Image (cartoon, rainbow, N blue to C red; front, side, top):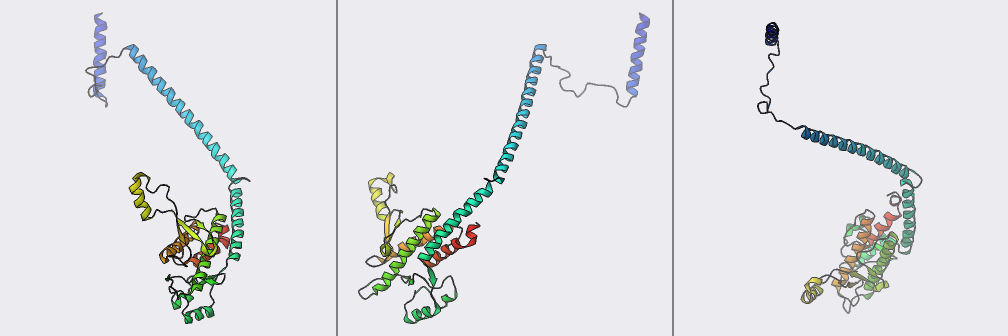
Length: 303
């Protein structure tokens, strides 16, 4: 027994000398957290932790499988959508339907342009009007050089009420009647084009030929003050539209000027709908002509 003990001590001394002479050095437990006070875990707690870890791993695996399944379904849906868009009833079919609709709209607007042609005054007629003093005061002598700002006529009549004049006993009633007819023509043309384009006008029109009116739903100062005195909560609700005359005879010039302004805003709304800009707040006939020109062009079909 003593011989066995001596041999074991000899083996330990040899192992210690080998460890001391090795590059790694002796194995130590220094620097390991909790080595001095090790935590003892019961076997039952260890089993619970292992079961929890196993359930989390299984749930993560199921989530990955579900993610892959959803990705495959989404990819198949995208492929099916691309097939539908490229098929007979896909994007090309919708594009053709849109072109057919715009072609129909163009045809109807062509009828409006034939019914209410907007043309420029020829130079000789413009000179005669300029020499006689019967011309739009807002137009300067060199305006005729610009095709957009040159004087325009609709059915041979020119809008000569800008700037608006006050009527008197000596006023030329033919001039005001002519302007009222022009505004009635423009109102009818704008209403027809809006119906063909399926655009509800911001300021509705009540047609009556040369006695047409335009509605403004913005509450007036009088209605606001009366509503405030009656019920402040209902202010601006159920407001009745205010009518403004598109003619001057027997009307206040301020109300007539505002009516022309609203009519031009309707034309601007239609221009913006087809992607164009207004030519200005005082160019009623020019805006109408530009509106019909764009719709009659090929670029409107290819939009």
